[in-house]
Length: 333
Image 1 (cartoon, one colour):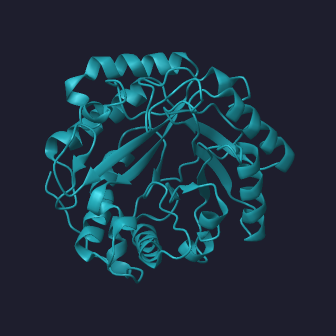
Image 2: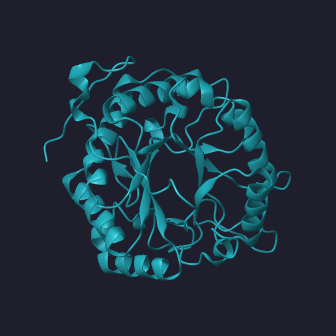
């Protein structure tokens, strides 16, 4: 497929720019009662803590039958939704991270993504989130000054992959940049998210996106009105991890209070990352939902076990594949 480049400025597009607007109904699978969640599925194997050669998109062609078998096992374990990461940068590939030079993936990686999403649909999953995860110089929080070329590369990657995601035959949501909701004091990241949000919604609307996922902490949540202005997404995606001081219950209830304070009372939530199959997290989040009445449509676990003094774990990913979901199923997730 010929790569397309769409150069958009910071203002909304005119009528000519709306030709590419996505057609069809809104992604409505999350607009009813809560349904089972599932996992972030990014890797089909680990060597110790090394995940890098085994990304399910970049390396799908290396292990298609293994990946299909893992999808079947996750579905049989009660998981109904998945979050698929798109790791990319302007540079060499790793097996997980893909080269996005020119604002698109290679033909082989476009085919890998197509085949993976088809396998997810064939396994019986009912919905996906696709999250764009920028690495290295493509990550706007690393910029010392505005980088227009990389901004356009990141935007065009989303634009060029959108037809593959939308055409996969499964309801979907797109996370435009993982955990990119900026803290205060990061004006470049704020400008990046504001401009990317205008670009995306001008071309595709907002029916199929959760905007930018965010860590559920006050300094990030406080910037949500500054990023979206008077055009917030219909659905917010939060990530909740406890530490030795603050647990998931406290993080959730604080987020709930702040979102009410900012007027975001009608939107639903998804929880896009939590510790893997973690009974403590499951109990804390269930208690928080019950005490606040906040609607959470589904939860997606990250394949990392919670650290313990007696159980060292990896820094980023410690489980592949993330089959067990029983701790969350027990709490109605």
